[in-house]
Image 1 (cartoon, one colour):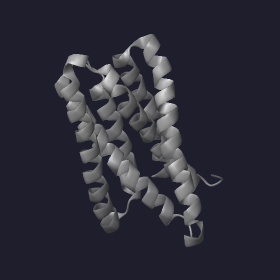
Image 2 (cartoon, rainbow, N blue to C red; image 1 turned 135 degrees about the horizontal axis):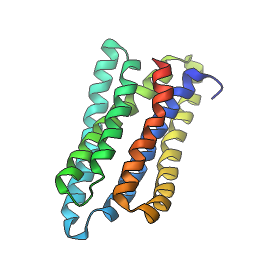
Image 3 (tube, helix red, strand yellow; image 1 turned 30 degrees about the vertical axis):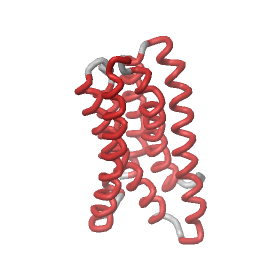
Image 4 (tube, rainbow, N blue to C red; image 1 turned 90 degrees about the horizontal axis):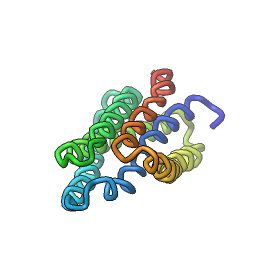
Length: 177
C-alpha cells in the first residue's frame, strides 16, 4: 500500500467491486417484484459477462499488456451501473448488468495482473491480500453505503450516484497510464 504502483490499481478495482456489491445486493430489491425473472436473468448475465471478459482480458493482456485495460474496465463498468438506474425498465436492467459485468471482468483481470507484474514473486502474497481486501471490502462497503443512500434517494438515483462516484477512480486510472 506504500507504493502508488499497487495503490492505483487497487483503488480502481475497489471502485468496481463496490458496484458489484451494490448490484448483487440491491438489484433484487430495486427491480419491481413483478419482474422477478428479470433479476435472475440480469444477475446471470452479469456473471456470464464478467467470466467471459476476464478470459478475454487475460488473452489480450498476455499479448499486449494488461495496464491498458484498467481504464476501459472502469469506464465500462461505470456505464453499466448508469444503464441499470431505470430499474423499472427490464431491458435497461439486463443490458446494464451485461455492460457492468463486462467491465468488471476486465477490471478484475487487468488490475490483478498489473499488480503481479509490478512486484517481485516474493510479494505475490501481499498482492493477493490487497486485491482480495479491495474486493471484499469494496463489496461490503458498497452495499452498506448504498443502502443508506437509496433510503433517501430511491434506487434509480442511488445507482446513478454510484456510477458517478465510480468515476472518482479515473484519477488513479489516468495517473497510472
